[in-house]
Length: 238
Image (cartoon, rainbow, N blue to C red; front, top):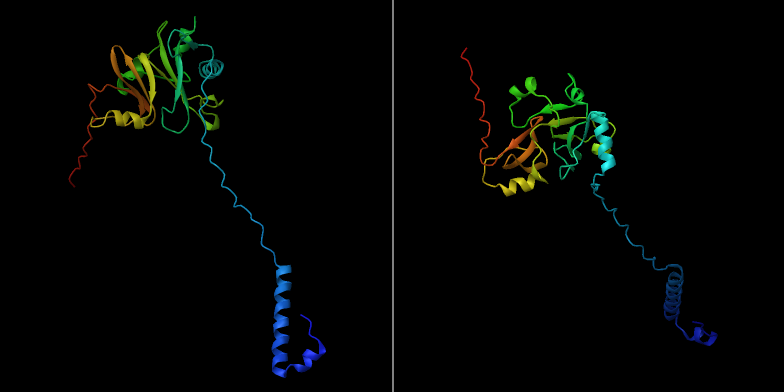
């Protein structure tokens, strides 16, 4: 706003002071409007989505390589079995394990019964006290080899060599069942305490489960299972 000289003379000192203040305030607001601008919209960064590791299906060449790692050339896949191999976390260490139905390779029975093998020969139907001295692999016997996973590559890892070779453990209708599903399906029963996934199957006409607990594999028959009784502690008198 511009005031003429005649209008300035006509103003009283108070009116003149008030007019100058209003002009100054208006100019200040106009300058601020030019300088200050509305900040541009910046979307908040989205959090990274966690990716769960996917279980890659086992392939025949990989399974054969895993067998050679443990058994060299003394055991081969029993292709007559269906399935002949499958995976699961059987010992409950959050690493995928490999189960393979095997039989002694031709002319390699002596190697399967060497004195200090690279695997643990067990029979889930026998007690630990009776199995070690008498167990041996027989000609054309079908067994279940379970190779425990190790490291980031699970059972495919070059250092995955801990293996259980199980007798009398290959049956029909083989499926893998999680511990959670097993407990839900048998709620109210007396149950064992499996450490990982279970192998559901029918062995010698009996339906049951192969499971890992207490550093060994055992067999659970829902009809005959009896939990181990707690060992009572006897304190001698002083």
